[in-house]
Length: 143
Image 1 (cartoon, rainbow, N blue to C red):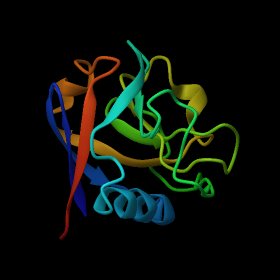
Image 2: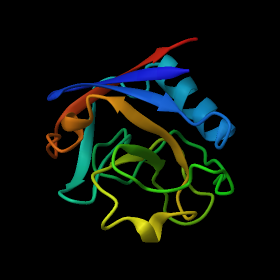
Image 3: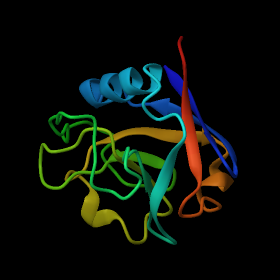
Image 4: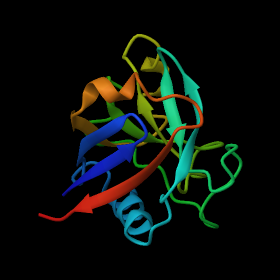
């Protein structure tokens, strides 16, 4: 399963890590299909680190009203450029906020602490163009 993340800077195609993070992927897909991410902002962008979004309030303090468990044991749990990973306020507190990694240099400490659940396969150049306050929506592509 794939998705397109449409941003103010362009679109990115994402391939999900369904084998490594099935519950996280299912949660993200469910939220996307329900329109949860429609028009939300990237509220935190740190060049050379990550672009983070998925807070309904647009400030980084909100979520979907529930939490999900981290999935940290799969093969693809490394924060390389273009990886989508769940943001959280401590183990097993994620919900809807996620981030897209800008590069490996500053993210190794996130490995096996935040669930990696997908990777940008097309439009990787868009990752570095995202600005704080840019909006996005997620289109799930079945099959």
